[in-house]
Length: 306
Image (tube, rainbow, N blue to C red):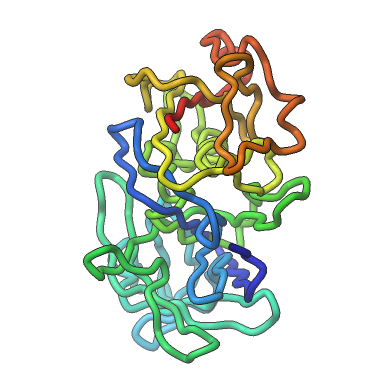
């Protein structure tokens, strides 16, 4: 399914990425599915790709807020006179502007907010420029309830098959609304919060490596080779996710994609049809999966079950 449709370039201090299936941060194995339109870092809904949201000119109850930023995953800001400040669920009712890639903007609304653990999540909607209908930003779940999003600082490069595709872009003027049913949001739920750190180690690169792993972006160029419904077991060297299952090993991951991929009898890749990507032969290694690789650059390792 192609992502080459209308594109939202939402700018500010928070962006978002969608993923399919469910994620349990305490359970390393889950049904992953990030193929097709929902594979990307931006929200894809009814032909619209949401890349970011503008933080300047945010309106709440008819008042324009200044200095809107993300503190971790929580939105914060104040009135122009500084007499009143807003944080977290104080942004319910706020209206942001989403920027369309082809020019123009569309409103993005904060409909609800809550804390899940230590992460702020937002229920948002946007005005579909094609139909002029207000739609849930991240779609709805099986029960028809809007899917929540998590604010992430910066934006992502949504190109495919080119250097830098699928990469995080440091942009203090933009934030991403990461849908919790998509790769960016799933990786936060798995414990890789890009604003946080563990024992002095920032999790920003772990989050990027996680998005590559979920999408089977072996080459680190934005292309996804995953197969929907594939059970994944992932683990790291920080104790966030542990290896608790005996699935066959697949690959080691860094922010730029797969570092090493299993060879020989364990050689595995998720692409339908069994045809590996062009970079595959350069990454195959008989030593893939050695825990010592955590000390010289590998951030995540994963196994999967066909």
